Image (cartoon, rainbow, N blue to C red; front, side):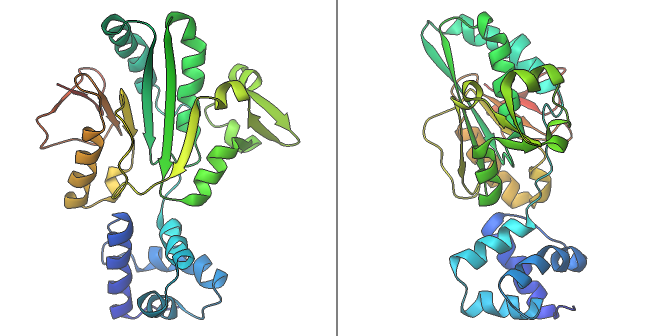
Amino acid sequence: MTIDAAEFDFLVKFIHEKSGIALGKDKHYLLESRLLSVIRLHNLDSINTLSKTLKTAANANLVNDVIEAMTTNETSFFRDTKPFVYFHDILMPEIMKQNKAPFKVRLWSAACSTGQEAYSLGMYILEKKHEYPGCTFEIIGTDLDRNVVTKANSGLYSQFEVQRGLPIALLLKYFTQEGDQWRVKPELKSFINFQAANLLTYTPIGHFDVVLCRNVLIYFDTETKQKVLQKLISALKKPGGNLVVGSTEAVQGFNEVTTVAGFPGIYKLV
């Protein structure tokens, strides 16, 4: 299956406009391999036909399927422990000191994929809740891909998925086994919600103590990255809200936030 140059250029532009994902001119194979399932699902005969259909007769399902095929959903439980250590050792003591009970702490897991990050935060909170008297929590997870959001909301994970980063004690405490799968218990699910949302267009309701958008910015070009960062920073509570990106990702050009010493990828609103 070979894509015509004009159709490749169209698809690259289309995907960028819809998702912010930037594909270089050397990504022919990636584009073709990712979209093969979409071509088969919609009974099209080639990637060129897919491109032409998007131009002339695209429906919402086709558009969504194309964008979802291009997203990367690599995730695991308790991926990179530093943000969790920061949350408990530094941020929560500050929040407890600054607020009078009762109050709510809000966290947004942007680009949440299948929900492991949000549920990891939830388990961490439940394990430490005795240290947070008078405090309740709300975790919101969003992702462009409707399929991963559906899975996150179901709270159902395979044996392979729970073996990636999830300690056995927490698995047995917060999950119920269903055959060869594991489902999140109501205690954990009760304060965590997921919804499909595009970071380029989504404006959350209210502000957050913590916004996490880890290992996502690397897929955007500079202009898109700055737009997304502005949106994320605008969603932080003022003052003192915290933005968490990947440990190798940098937030540049925003005087509103400052780095946190010893915690790469964490930025505090000043």
